[in-house]
Length: 405
Ligand SMILES: [Zn+2]
Image 1 (cartoon, rainbow, N blue to C red):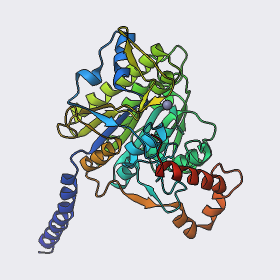
Image 2: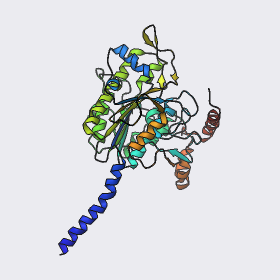
Image 3: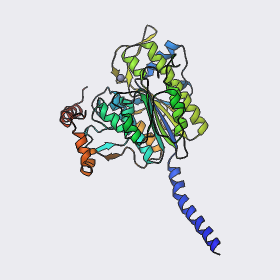
Image 4: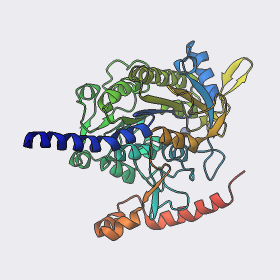
């Protein structure tokens, strides 16, 4: 009788325990999301890559939906990668140069917008960002840190080293502290062979050789993986029953477009396209993964002159950029543009996040709780100088009130 009762009790506990689980799972349409950002990749950058390389593009030919993202920031019709990254990571438009912080609170004193990478962790998923840029670059930083300026490298690297994310991989940067990252449970690595040896469940922080990751084939003697190598390995490490979020950035499309180097920009785009194919192969096989490809802005003002795609500027432009979707028929409407911040908002819905966009407490709250936090913040060696930041904040407040036409 005792045995029967205990079996009944076990069944009861299991059932009541399972009900909310099933409910929570139903709310999320996808366990996994892979968001791929071709930095500086405009509609004509795709055409330029096809012209330069004589290739077709997987992202164009195989996609389920194709629309556009409107890229402006809160302060300017032409965004930079910090505000552009923030719109895509957090679903809010902010001032150029701000990293996942509000235009009205750049010091992050009162609140910060939660990023998709952070929200994924809070939902029980694994989460990571990978880039061909240095790890403190504006795009990866917009998913893994909050700061008043993209140039606050020490602040960004410190936040990343203390981050809850499962992996942050990119080019090496001098402000990164291996000791701090290791203290926080990260395995720090610098080569492809070390990356290949990583086991699922580990936390890893990669500081690769910045020069070679963007190539289609790693050059002779390179110790770094290519972007598609990184994408394949990151997916295998993050994949688990609770799901994952991964941001993949092809940063060199932007860098070579600033330099007006079509051959290099085209190769960087082809490698980004290879990484997309890797992600989509996994997603189609898995059946529970959404893949979204877009850009933060266009770079180089590429246009068709005398039958050839050419650069017309070394800066960013404000034109709409491609928004390409795999494994969904309703994330966007074919051919219709949406705002950059809506990309994050819609992804949040598909992940079944309770609220998104949503704010987290800023640092001032933390300071009241932790005096050492305040002392760290006003350390003279810290690049986040509150007085300088107040000047920046005032200037940027005016930029938002009276945006440049
Ligand atoms: Zn740029």
